[in-house]
Length: 286
Ligand SMILES: [Zn+2]
Picture 1 (cartoon, rainbow, N blue to C red):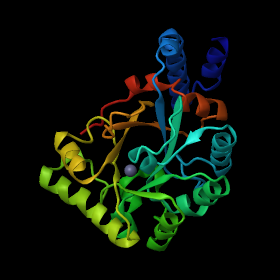
Picture 2 (cartoon, protein in one colour):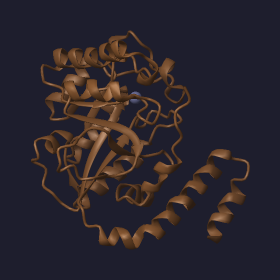
Picture 3 (spheres, rainbow, N blue to C red):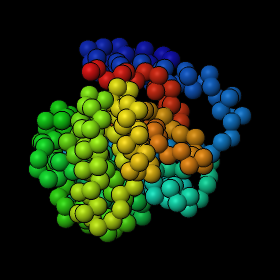
């Protein structure tokens, strides 16, 4: 505990850093309190890692070195890493922990930096693409201030990912807050992105990630549309999942990895030790 007080004193003027330290204390305390229960609960679990930009230098981008260390720890640590598609076909070997890797939005660095690392280490991931960015109809900088100046992947790059065995998922056309638009507009956003992707990569698209993805960014209409057109849907609710053997693949939680996460925190997050952070997630302001 003393080291946390020292860290808070050192970062006193950095509000973000102090916030992160308090989050860490909260997660560690909850983890300690729930440890006995978790030992008793032996249900297999699924951890879906969530990334955005890798190595672009943007505020929320993970450095290429950190990303490679994290991926290497998966491939060399004997982790059961599968694709979302393997979950759907139930071909994923069942183990205590199953890990999936996902990227949202379709940033160019996913192809230029993350893809070669994944390929080198023999890992496969799912890339959720916002089609309006790739088509040039919407600009990334208009949607995210933390990722300004990042370009989207091109269709050739997305096709190249797909033909290398990576999975492509949909992420709407213009990245709206689906909760703020009516059912008809939601329908257009969701179906349009799926149709464009399927036409461009010549493969069916079964997976979807909700833009922003937390409370206040989707409603029952969204889930109804997604259920009709996809077989799996990811949110950004922070947590690992009970392994979905019941075939309920809608509203899956994910574990977001941050630029400041050490390899130790990465592993702790992946194995559910930060799941309590979900209770600190705020509803998106509308
Ligand atoms: Zn997104």
